[in-house]
Image (cartoon, rainbow, N blue to C red; front, side, top):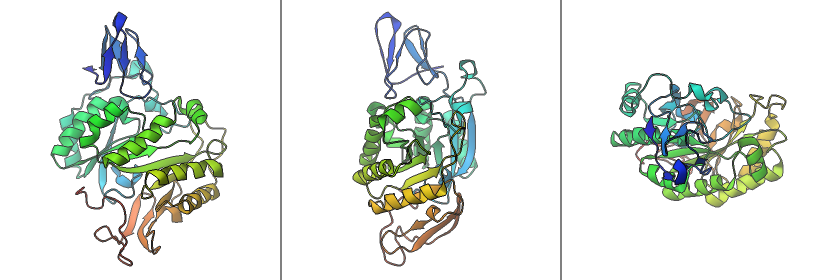
Length: 338
């Protein structure tokens, strides 16, 4: 166990965790909502520091990040646990573990993660699969070392960390894909056990901090697929930055949502049309390999710039961050120097 960051000690050996916006009040011998932070006699500990449950080499497009160092590989790590309880979670077996399974397995140091990243010729580390916020101490130490060695760091996140935690990781966080699961507070509460507004505020704050931001919405039939809600999401993203890529992904029945059908591809096409019509420069459809919406087009002259199939780039004609046909600056981080 490692003592946690971002908590305050209260009376009767209780503690208040200030890592994420749940801000759990944790009694002695109890855990927070994430299950991986425990109060031992008035001291809060992380149970997952140095214990990755998953480590893989991924194409960066899988995060998904389409405008951050496209075509490169990223070393992806996760521990068990999550501060959300999403009924459609694709990784529920590790995000919602039994308490007795937490903190088991071999230990891998932050230094070792960085060394593995270099050994596999990856240009970045992605903290992903579950929720990087809940293994913050491990992610922070890894990201600090990685940055000193010229590597980039990426959070694939539900965006529920506190301002204090975000300010701490800022010097070492270069990009983030943030899930915006709905634009309805009641849906957030029902499906995820959380609130909408902290996510919106963190999207804005990350953008202000200069972190490269992309947003993903999993479009779920009858839950968040109405044209009105999709328009609200698009309008919000535009208000933060029209250059922010919006990934609209196809839902497949999973975990506690097996009674719902897969998202019709026509719904994704409509969502993409909505996003573009509201002023977003880049809107992508996900989980539909071969779809036109996987490709990057110049927002000005409509030239095909990056042709993709799934996570594979077939060709990329962006030169020096610009469209070679009309000269428009294509928003993103293209060479890893930013």
